Length: 302
Image (cartoon, rainbow, N blue to C red; front, top):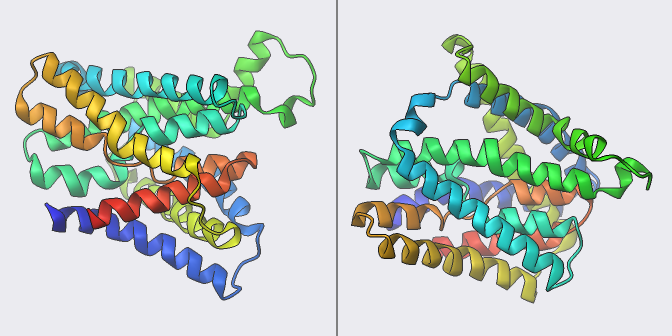
């Protein structure tokens, strides 16, 4: 178990530290992370998202509706709770709040899940990872991107926008549009040939690697923070969210293996997107990068 977890997180730790080292020796300027994240969010990630969702087996979700429902409800519930608490109780900004909500509610199941869950749950691990990837890419990522776009005052120039214009400003984001187009083509059976798999997989690796590398650069240029907000994010991610799911699953009488698998799934901290969003919108970079760094360090050492 320990070796499996370390093996899953080691590439994350190494890439982040490599980014930090590159910044420390002056290889990149302070504005480079924003340029790198633009490449990730505008090109590499949207194309990778489209293909991965386009190749989705729609029967997988229908046959495993129990896993899909619990993952969907868990992510959506905690996204809303964290967003509303952050926005209206902590009075955090309209940009930081949705980013924080995604960081806490949405596990990075596609990045760490295969290496962690598949060896432990050979029969159901692949299903959990596949469905979790769909939930993250089709639901949580577009939801966060749309809310951020709606709240971004830079885009509308403080002009009054109609409801349709506001929604469209979010839907036209590359990560949202590509995810929805991939879902539509998958549902109607328009799958791209499998020969393109290697090409789009490389784009996915570039998106993940570039995002993690930029986190290391952000940590160097802004220096790690161990503020109350950072510790709160880590505590929510590693304790509150998984324990709440564990309690709900036990009370509802779910099988022990399903309880263990789902609880472990929600302990996988979100690695890349919160930091990329924070860099893209210019708020919360230090908090998100520090939260990812601290959470990963805790997971490795525990």
